[in-house]
Length: 182
Image (cartoon, rainbow, N blue to C red; front, side, top):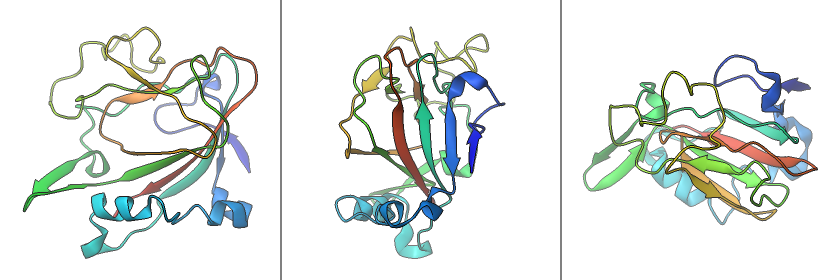
């Protein structure tokens, strides 16, 4: 069932819509659970050799003009899924997200934005002040825009500060997000 976006943060009608539990949408979504070109990377970084792997959340995010996802995660996110560790020369993390573009996502389409290295410090990024909390990432310095073609998959862990730019173009930005914790 369609419902407005919720986590992270309070409900905000400018964030778009999520179609939750999308795996129930049928074979086309089931085929992307363990897609061969990237599932081994998910297993490697989610430490599933010891604990197994499951999908914590699976949804399609639909964003129209004027909508964006607020910046979230980063240094101040203390949750287990937002953490990583380096042990025996291997990196492990609490959650790997597979974001699969269902439409082309170019500049002004509400691209995913990431602040590099924002996971390495226990200090907030200078742009991530209380005044900016809950806002989109438009105008933030050092944010990297991620453009994708339909069918591309972006694998990322939840701990860097990320969100999206406001969609300015007509049409819809559609992505599938599967979240894999160990």
